[in-house]
Image 1 (spheres, rainbow, N blue to C red):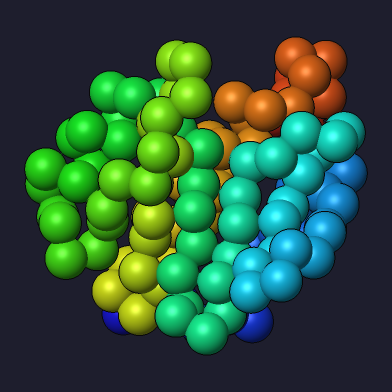
Image 2 (tube, rainbow, N blue to C red):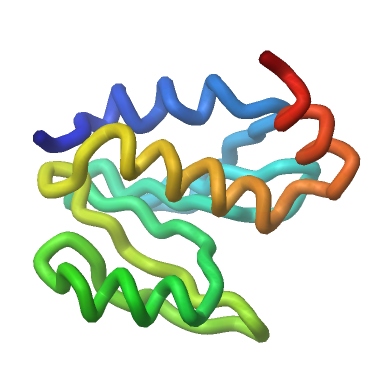
Length: 114
């Protein structure tokens, strides 16, 4: 169990139009200019966009893996500790964060792919 930084980065390659930006100690990931994920390589953590309900549920279920980061509007960002999460679960959360951010037409085109 656990995901390396390199494995996390390769997950992002499976999603269309992901851009990357530097921010000092962290790297941001965006789709069409809107952020959906952050990476802090030094701490082996990522921040992912989620709904507030999902943020609350993830943190309540496994506080050793997830912690609340912040809320903004109807979204609750969650910190994920990479060494403590299963790759399939992380990819599902990354994809969901991307889907919450990408334009509907891009999401539909991605989901229609085999």
